Image 1 (cartoon, protein in one colour):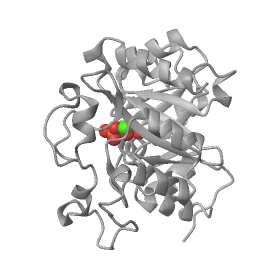
Image 2 (cartoon, protein in one colour):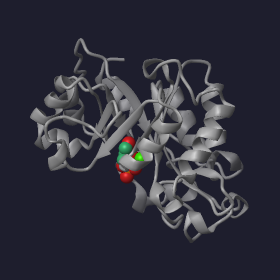
Image 3 (cartoon, helix red, strand yellow):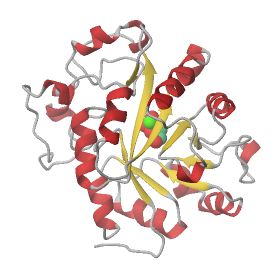
Image 4 (cartoon, helix red, strand yellow):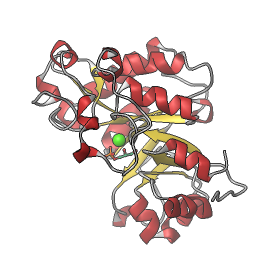
Length: 275
Ligand code: G3P
Ligand code: CA
């Protein structure tokens, strides 16, 4: 069944089409682009030798055949690992159906560690507008280096200083208000998203940290506090919700008029939206 409303939220592929293909790999992002996602979400961390790579966890243990913290490994160490085969193990399946993706070990680049630079190239070559939502992970540990490297990289692609937030194909997300503040100080027109796992009493009235335009509540907040979402909207903020995988949650997001649905299942959400 489709659940169509006048309002058209963006569909954002969380870690790529990460239900079908291994998260944060070229394979997952290519699949998301093929599926028709409007935007791609990725987490970024710094390697020991200063490269920004797309990895969610502090360690590589869950999503590769290696071990250790990303921050303690060099890019060459990460490049020697396989970030794909874990996904084909039954224990990681989230659905009974076969995933709509086949792991071919010969396509090494498809399941290697993904640098943010390579992801930006993929987006640039997509042949249509595909937006990118980059999440800075644990940025306090590096005291500003993640944001600094991120802005240098975005500059190389001409994406660091958009004419306005509305026109920017890139936005920066974080649970850390300090990280977003660093980004805004360097690039005031780059849109920023404040991620929330719970509603802080300080922000209950719908305000966000200074200068941040977009709220990023979890789907649990949306389910439990729909009035808060309405408050955010009334305060003039966009609302980008994560991680929305169930049809009834997609419908709830539509009913509340959220602006972006961040999902591991972009094709299923697009179907639900009648797109
Ligand atoms: O899109 C925001 C969401 O990704 C935040 O949670 O843990 O999946 O990075 P996490
Ligand atoms: Ca994330």
